[in-house]
Length: 248
Ligand code: SAH
Image (spheres, rainbow, N blue to C red):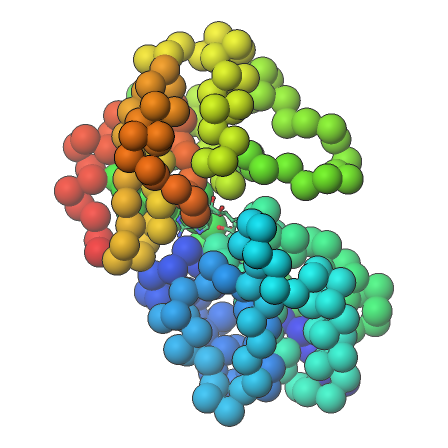
């Protein structure tokens, strides 16, 4: 019996992959990877390894979750190092917790290797620090696209708007009009800065900076699309000072 490593690939820039994760990719026997893992990271995989694309982007499921988990269990039965490679961090909106629990239940040895999550890295590469002594002492990571059958019926946007100075939304572009409406009805000012970062940390990174009151219109006008994170709060103002330092 082998072992499954649930590895975070980070947001795209290969320099942001962990040393531990890279070492495991280099000696993996099987790697099952997701759509948001960049080519530069896939290039780190042992050339002899079996590579399986389990990529799923909204509306384009190539492998069902059950199939992926089953495959991991099967591969771990006759391979020493099986890697499940996910974009960003496996435990941040990546179903890593579910997958790992299923492997534990099946009696498979499994270990997680965290990655740098897109919310932190894409914001950083866009010159947006998520906390700042003058602007924000709190951050919330929230999904803008909730799965059916989850433990709670809805994200409490009201509470988030009132309780968190910085809000980082994953998978929020499709639902942006709804989210903006929810935050506005929680009395978040239309002047609140918001920044969208698409393909963060990759050469094709794009940013759209605006205000809560106008961002939906800006997205429509520019055709800005997923995958992107949205950062809301006063920290987004730092973009005008820091974005020139983009490390790409
Ligand atoms: N586990 C991942 C998130 C998976 S959910 C992580 O920790 O980053 C997928 C969502 O993550 C996308 O819809 C988008 O909102 C965000 N995302 C992932 N990679 C991104 C990137 N390079 N730039 C901007 N957003 C990204």
